Length: 149
Ligand code: PCA
Image (cartoon, rainbow, N blue to C red; front, side):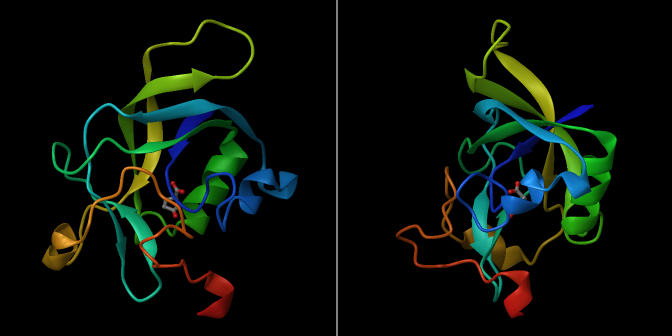
């Protein structure tokens, strides 16, 4: 089992959330909501308007997202789905827990895997920073799903 923090299209209500719900990919259980303990630049980049957490801790904003407990099969699926390690890299970072599901006392913060972007064109750092991603947000940069590319 592993914890994954999702901040982009994998969140509830976002265009790729369905892949987390498909048991053919393994198991993913929603555990709660959180935000990155450190700020990061979350930008919407490229011709397909893909959300990217740039691996530049200390710049940008603390980013909100959802925490899932996933099994090994789902983790492998997500690596493949996110084209990791080519397009995204999966790294562990500290997430402050804002809301926790059912049993157990909430921990204040925990380490989770996150799909972030380590190498990027320098101009991406100049893009507007978001603290919460919504594909249909007022930025107008609607995500272009893979099936349309
Ligand atoms: N999917 C992953 C990384 C960015 C994206 O769109 C996520 O939601 O966390």
